[in-house]
Length: 69
Image 1 (cartoon, one colour):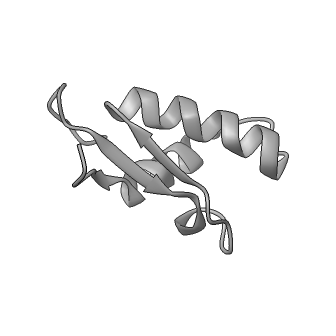
Image 2 (spheres, rainbow, N blue to C red; image 1 turned 30 degrees about the vertical axis):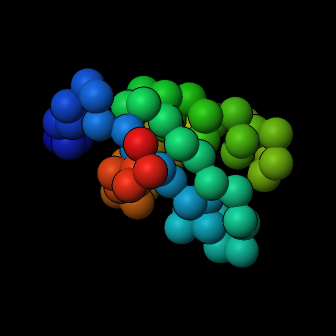
Image 3 (cartoon, rainbow, N blue to C red; image 1 turned 135 degrees about the vertical axis):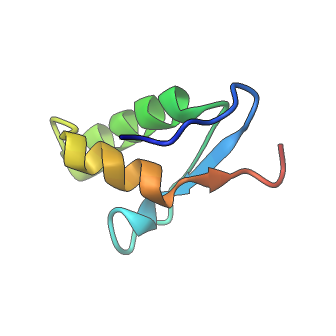
């Protein structure tokens, strides 16, 4: 199953860890916000119409605590 994060744990994802070469960085307050923002970015920039569970797991796997929040 997925990871459990504290509600106040800000997260960061570098899109390039999911789509090689992309420099976009997503900041979010929690896992749900990260997934939502990445979905919007992937749809708009990389023409990804649907986030599969495998893609969501990849995003979760490469997300990390945001040291600036």
